[in-house]
Length: 363
Image (tube, rainbow, N blue to C red; front, top):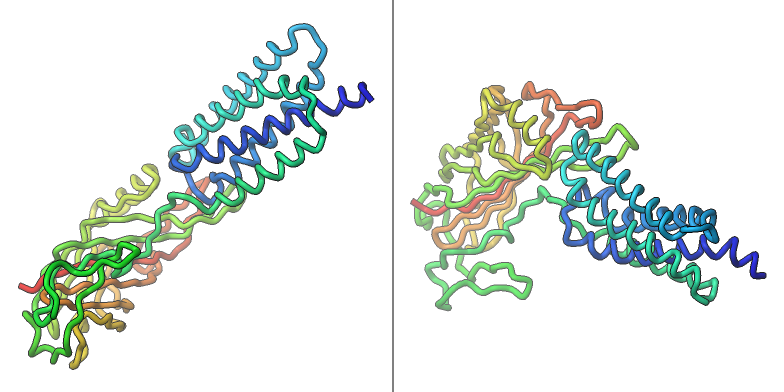
């Protein structure tokens, strides 16, 4: 029985140490910014820690009982950390940003924990079911936190814009009410006859945000992700029953990857301004102030010097002198003479989803 414990227990001790490392590293990973939440998350961190714990246990079983075994085991752990650092550096230089800032602290936690605790657990009188329970707990913790990430979303909503102006006939004074979830609700307003009751038929942008979202597939492993870029450079003017125009500088979009941004900026460097013009941005003839009006508007979109007819799905809301609009549009990149910037490591799909969100004030 003693020999059986000596042959099996070092491996179980490694798994127990790996479980401790998995929970610790998964918790530490939450505030760190991941290269991509799809594959670099608490679940993958947990799996890596358990795998390193298993490898450490097998190695410790082979060293157990030899002279200077603990020192040699710690040296192997240090070597594993150095190897992981090299791999992370290669991935950061060739694939995605932030592999080093995300992975190195977690690798240090895992290798130090496994390197120090595996020999300690081997000498302790612990029931053999303890490592199995620890593994199960680590998997539950890592899996439960896998959905908690910092990935950028290209989705924009009217709820993202506070209502800054009050309706002229609002019955309450003071700032607009704020809902329990932190979003600002527009004050109640009465029915308006459009365009007669408008404060003005012309509205100038006060704030504007635009996003693009493009599907990408990593060649190694076939992992599919959605790349998202965001710009706060959207500007323009809305003319109810007239010509409205929106513009954005495509070189101002920023994603979570510097390498990707440099490629996108290079594509549009010669002709960076995207323009959309339409005469269809209107409100219904009878409109209740503060309500969201949904519609589809067509117009001309110019990107990369190429002009096409497109149709946006929009939501609009008017409160006092403030007009808020959000819109979404799906395009084919090659329709605008933009070749998807695929390379050896990433394949980019020939499509993009564009979204805009702006708040405009009556002139």
